Image 1 (cartoon, rainbow, N blue to C red):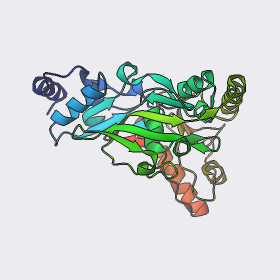
Image 2: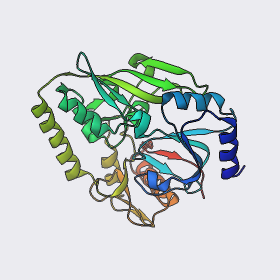
Image 3: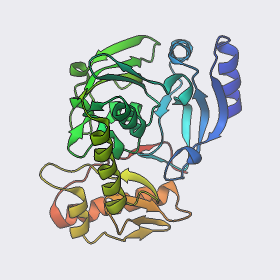
Length: 307
């Protein structure tokens, strides 16, 4: 089925849909690497109810892929088949402060805005989100963390919609979190999170956030087209040290390069393709395995088909 045919079919079969359906939508502009092919159809839901309606009515044979801010994502050059769902600021971009130093945030809220909203409300314990370049949905799905803290430590519960359109409230214990891992069902699309902090001084929290931001700017290539940390830290090791020891700092494939500043970051220096970046990452994994015997595991999510 071609892209326009799928979009037309969905539009006809879902007359109550309020969100947007976009055929053959370019995804490279939605990822920080700025690479990748198009989505067969991109769906931007209006809100949680619209998302639930869409998923309930969507034929089971049509694959669904969810993306967030694209900060930790490598889309392959052939694009993504079926429907790509992206939650946006409208419907999923609100933060609210609740009693007991709690903060509720939609899945599309950038992590940095979670940290800022908490600071403004005098809620301590969430400032580590200043160091995560993604959004709440990604943090929920990957147990996002930085500077010694992880999402599992501050989450009370999450809301999610499953592939059949049913809404779930998931307590943190049922997320079955591990290091950069979430054991909640794969078909759950997270829509909202409730975080627990503690009373704190806004100025002290903002100072902590400033320190985190300064550290990131000093040691990470945050002004480059990158996907953040490429590989998970293996037990007992730091990925960047293994990569450095294997002689991969500055290694390149086409316009894809291992960062000189922080060698667990890959950079698109201009016209790199998704294939260039993935080939570079696999070369790094091969060299690290040969040098240290350690198998690096991708932290960046790779989606879609080769060209």
